Image (cartoon, rainbow, N blue to C red; front, side):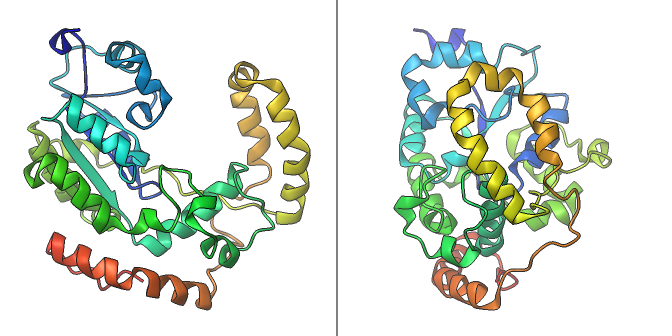
Length: 292
C-alpha cells in the first residue's frame, strides 16, 4: 500500500482526556486550512480497529476532505497509551503531536463525573472511593485514572518517539485566558495562517454535567444497563439523539447545586501529583504552582 495515495493525518491532538480537547477540536475544525476527522475521536491507533489498516482508517474518518492544507484528528486517549504512541511513530513519523493539559486533580474530578454521566461508574461511588481504587480497575483511556495525570512520564515517551520539535503543549488555562495568543501559537506550530481572531465567538465545549438526584439516577442505571446490552450497537446508534434528550432530564445544565471536592480528597491527590507536577514544570519551563 502506498501511503502517499491515501489521506492520513499531518497532526494529532493526543490528550489529555477531560482537559478541553473537544473545544480545541472545534477551534481547529473552524480554521479554513485545516481538515479534522469526523467524528472527532477515531481511537484508531489505540484499539483493535488498527488491524483494519491505514486505508480503512483514511476512508472511514477523512472522507469529507476538500483540499485543505493539513489534516488532523483528536483522540485524547492516545496520550497515555504506549501502543498508540508506538504505532503513530512507526506509521507517521513526521506527524506533529499536540497535548492539552489540565491540573491533574481537576481533570480527575471531571473524569469522575463523566464516568457517572455515561454509566461507567455507579453514582453511589464517592469521589474518595474512586480515586483510591487501583488503577487497573479503572482503565478507560489506555491507562489508569491516577496514572493518566502523570503527564511528565507520558510526554517523555512521546518525546523519545517524535522529538521535542514535533510536540506542542498547551495548558487548559491558556485557552481559557488569552485564547487568541494560544491558538495563533498553535497555528504557527502547524504551519497555517494565524486565524484566531476569526474564532473569537466560537463557544468552548461545555463541562461535564452532574446528576440532579444521584439516588434516582443510580436506580435508572441499574434498570438500563442490562437493557442496553440486549439492544446492541445498531439500535443504540439509531436512538442516540432520543437517549441524549432523556438523559438530559437527569442532569443539571449549569453548575447550580454542584458538589465540591472534599478537602481530604484534594489533599490526597495533591500529594500524589506534587513530584510529577514538579518534573513537568521543569520540562515545560513553566510555573505550575497554581495547580492544586
